Image (cartoon, rainbow, N blue to C red; front, side):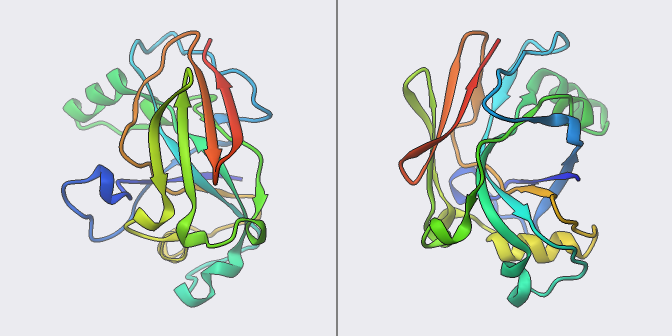
Length: 199
């Protein structure tokens, strides 16, 4: 399986609107499941969190048309895209790839998946990230520049989607620093679906 991440996909987090979805990859070793803690890597002193809606791909697809894209995912979860911002800054300055800042081990904690039929209007999913009891990110799928179907269709033009693949669909405004002993909680439509202690 692979993890595909979409960047710059919320109107609340952009001054300019990209013409096409931007995406990058994380390996399977980025996953953290069952609300296990996240351990800050020793190569970064500036770790940032990003809360995102995550799609679970349920069948193989290539060059998927937007009108069929809704049949290629069956569940949605909340996920955290952790970024080593100090490393990312160096990569950008030197024109290097971003993998060391974005795709490192355990950089993608993922909560429980909920069947999409149980979530109501998928174009109106409200989600929040709480840090130590304070809301730091507040988003809604209605604010996405590229919706779920657009994302699946676009990505599949370049990368074959397979059963079990995950797509992180972008983060709203409010991404910020996480430090040791912080406690992060993700809420989807008012229900806590993700917990992550920083260690």
